Image (cartoon, rainbow, N blue to C red; front, side, top):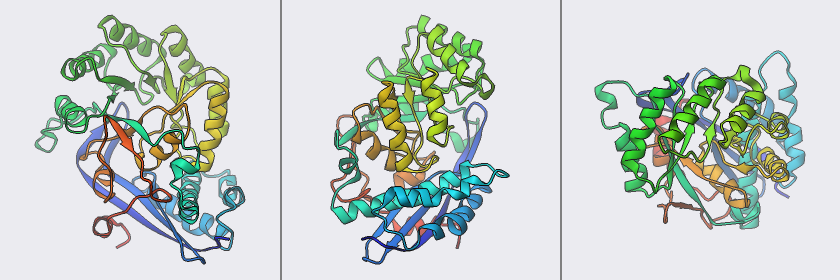
Length: 378
């Protein structure tokens, strides 16, 4: 029995050197929440999840500390489904969004799985299925960066040199949707020319296009000789599942979505409506590994591939555990200083693949100096 004794949370916020711009959003800080779950057996589960900036980070922390954590104190961490169900009532409050509660649940659920892995002496990728022990990695870049001294050195070519040249990643998720399709195609061609033909491209509009704009982008990029591994979140939210399906079928291009959903209910609608070829459901945003694995089972029934929205420290374990996993993702160090600096034992890529640790649980060692420097509660 792994009786849960107490839960500690540490909010982290790292300022970025400049504002990163996607199609319709801006990022000025990189944030996360470290969750430490202590058991009476003396084992501790440790994980970090999510990337909400202020003020949403405070909202998630409030729900985690005051509403979610107290519900699992005294429960057996080995009873995962019972613990998960016990944490669900904060999502029932209809006067506030449900997704902050699902993020809070994800923090505790991930720490629970880490302590289970430690108790059983198994890494989570193996415990969850063990299909492979490494996952191909792609970089995330192509942001619209400002013309400022702080952004110097972050041009498209420099990003590709980092992803492909320095680390041997197999491809890149390229941000689009903030400019007219013709301009975004020109940016993608610039990246393709620099990267060469042995480097795959995923494009991500972050819901920035209309259906007609997304189809125009697909047609123009194909005419220019660029084949896309998939097109992520091509259309605005008002297009609903039909918009994704239209781009997928009319554009004859694989479509990925799921990161904006926070439960299997939303993913069920995406999948059964034929809207996606790839699910990029985010365990850190949507209830943790327990809910992600339910989505993975649903996806398998419809032959939908699996990605994971960023969060390589968790996504790599999940994607390695199942046969339909695709690519784990990582930003550049300036966009995600947490992944590149807080994990002391982060492995080097091998032939473009991110190798998973053999140590129990998640297997990561977190840098206490980094944590103490950037924790928000001190």
